Length: 194
Length: 191
Image (cartoon, rainbow over the protein chains, first blue to last red):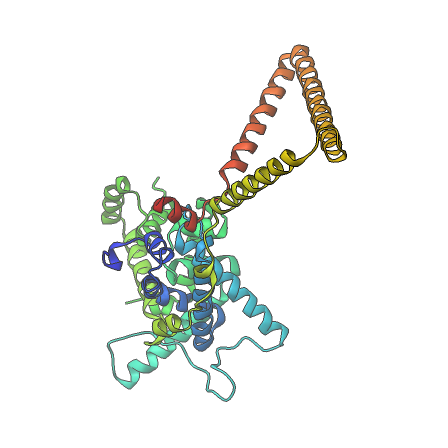
């Protein structure tokens, strides 16, 4: 059996359906960063993002025989994830829990950080500042732009995959990404200068 | 006049790895001569870098947690859908019925009540089949008459008829083709 890196998602799915269950671990490894970060940006809580990502992978595994190979696996996975996130957000709203960045009851609010090679206290503070600013800038985007920015930058989907997932024309996807990035640049101007 | 908006779109496509190769040279030449677009390229790269570096770390045991919580049941335990079993059952039941009917017929006395009942049942079945065939033939004849009337009235009618027939064919093709699934593809691959 070839290495997982040499196989496409669809080939991995076929191998799993033939009984090679361990290949699903390769798919999880391939998508875990993108999926957790996509959900993290939507839910604003890393623990919840991990839990929901796990649920999404299990849901996808259970329905693997119904995967239509004429579509991309990534498109299918993120559609399941998007629906699961929307359901979770609805449930949270029903419970009247405010959408904050808090990790949970009794926990301190956790600022998002940006990885940096600067280990000094000043650098650490700057990273926290940046992380918070990025999250605020992304949150401030209108939903239609925000979700495309998330799908492109955190889920790393191509224009075509986003167009399929969102059922939008390719030109609309490009325009919205363009507009969304312009808005982000304006909001993050302080961090984009040399 | 230079359309910076178009070059800005190309710069975004470049950032996403979606710039068409034939535009690469034109974009590089333009950026080399345009300070505004050069600054835009640098700013976009910094924005992408900022977003990438803000990614949260995934728990080291995430993958193993998913794999250990995968359900054992689901599609794995479902046998693939195939016509082999229903056809085999039909053949077995058909053969058994034929044998039983043959044995019964051999034991029946000619002119007896069972023979008469069987012959009446056969007659009823035959009449029903004839009546059904007559109805189908009449329906199709009606459709044929309506179609020929529509076709002979005007070229537009002929066109409408043609489109109707095409749509019907597409519908039948779509129904026969069914939905492709990964499991179906794997089964076909095995076959």
